[in-house]
Picture 1 (cartoon, rainbow, N blue to C red):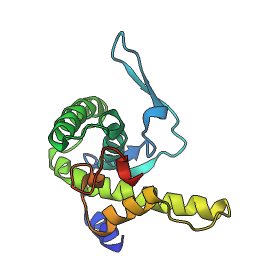
Picture 2 (picture 1 turned 90 degrees about the horizontal axis):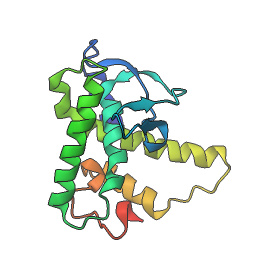
Picture 3 (picture 1 turned 180 degrees about the vertical axis):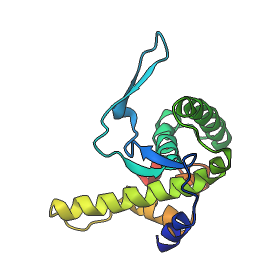
Picture 4 (picture 1 turned 120 degrees about the horizontal axis):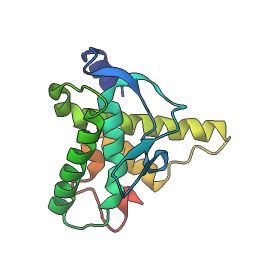
Length: 166
């Protein structure tokens, strides 16, 4: 986690890479008008300043649900590449994102993973739950600790029968 934070500190924070982000993109925070293709994003209570790639990595991570049960990793990768291309086009219609940042998608997926793990531990503490690490959380921690990119989605660790470890 310290390595990820150190890497972030060295990143460019220009107007083309850094600004106001949603910080909670998921399927529950936008709707699509299927007649027009118009997307409406809402629930901005977690908005903050950050790298645009954090939002894009979050959208990428939430997109795996559309193809997670496909056993063929190459088909999963093709779907995710196509999905991300569409997401990126929409995001760029509102944000002037520098091209060089796109290479950092795997880094920001790891940062999202770290934020997700820390958030789960925070929830456990706030809810006075036992600090039990379930199978899914163990899987996410393993991906972070062993630097398995893309949440293991294209790695041999991933099982389409039990997505994300459980």
